[in-house]
Amino acid sequence: MHNHRAASRYAKSLLVLAREQGVLEKVMADMQLFLSATEQSRQLDLVLKNPIVNNDKKSKILHALFGKRMNKLTLAAFDLITRKNRDNILREIAREFVVQYNNLKGLQEAEVITTIPIEDDLRQEFAGLVKKISGKEARLREVVNEDIVGGFILNVGDRRLDNSLRSQLNKIKRELTN
Image: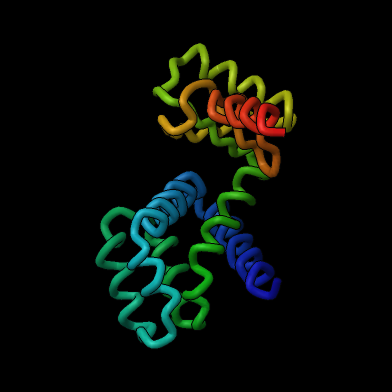
């Protein structure tokens, strides 16, 4: 809980500063890039959370990876957070920044999982469904996963609409075995 509160405060401060400097969209893109990098590289995530790796080294790693691709404000925030020994919550700060940005813009993050990439008309239907569920405009993240066999899974906040063929087959299987 303590880390979440700290992450929320850092994220809010960065959001306010980014708005004041007119670089809010760029910082948002930076946070998404950072989250994507830490999700794809377990090693990066572990290095940032490792208390044995000193702060200067972590800062150099962040600058080497993101220095040319991120806004100066984002890099300065990362430096400050690292100097304050809060680098273990950098990922949580980035997540919280995205949440606060979405609240500010009236957006709802949603994940749609399908077996094939979706077309524009279906994408609009999912966006409409998300708006109906949350009352906010949708920011869809599309995931292709052939394991669901067919249909779709829609995750909106803490809600899940599972209309996949795999779950329907599992339901039939459970009914037949009972």
